Length: 276
Length: 204
Image 1 (tube, chains in turn brown, blue):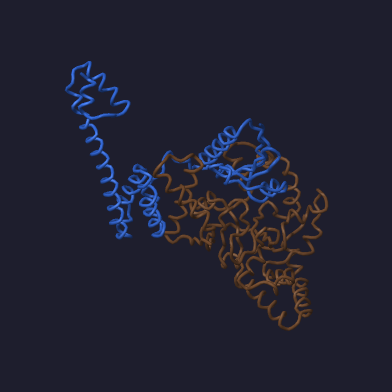
Image 2 (cartoon, each protein chain N blue to C red):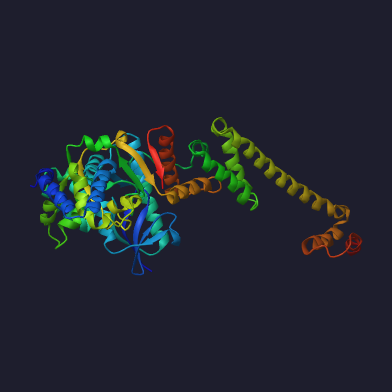
């Protein structure tokens, strides 16, 4: 079994060396800009996880965020069924891929996944609510690693069989995330305005981003803020307002219930909500 | 028509659906504008990275898919100990609404609901607002809410007055003999096309 975090730690010097070589190859103004970008990533970029509103309300209710294995374990306890059977039922044709990855690494079933985020909605293609974790959370993480792209895609890119070669070469300890990001994005940094740097870390089409794998429980105290688009925020209020004039469907009532709970937590000062 | 549910999220009834060879992300209330076209790779991404449940189930029509998604959502939330409420607490909604949202709601009442005569919707909102804690936090909104309620009452009152006047206009018919009343009914149904004397003449 591979120790993902030990591999990342072993790559630290290589990541540092690559960054220094990249800087050395640039003209002075470009090198200054690149160093500025690296400092910006180090100070501003946090781990974000895009979640469903229901999951956020669970965290607000004191239920830690669960990965798929923890969820299946909980279902197994509740139903008396086998955990593996529950996972197969949920993942169907994708079961083998998930298991091949998770079982290749030590504690792979404890991994949680996030993205490096310095503004914006994160990977919001399915989870519209971007939960940003605190500085303190990542400062206290013992197991965390960062790399460019989607871990599953990287490890299964050449064929349907698991091949971690590229991941093993490119993975960085979380502490070196800013050097990794700068080396990877060097061609784009100069052309981008500083206001758009956050879109370099997570592109609007989600094709470019830096995945973070970590082990650690995410609770309400670890949430810095929840970011959501103004459009989604307004739609939720429209839905809440329509409740005064007509009866809503079950999914609509559930959405408004979750939204009101999030807003209650915002009002009580438990969490910050940012609309962009 | 066959519709395939490729993957879904039971927490919020969002689904990836294949219909007429096209793959789409569909969210409640499942209107056309609410769907996003997806590439084939989206199913795997959604299931492996975004907590969707893989499905592959086929349905005859949209109603059947939506019914299935609703049932999944109800069951999931029940098993999580947070069932979908039968009704939502209106006052609770208003208590967490920021000032700008409340101001927008009041504008909607004034500019949309009252002109469209959606009085029940408007009154439900305004009464809940008056009962909520908004009066302590944003007392300035209460005057606006009370004024809007008064405006609705006036419109409804004048509507009732008009109905009474109309009723009184035909009151002479009430004193006519039975046979005459049948003819007067005809006039009521088909429109008053002459003078009151003419109507009496028809009735006699």
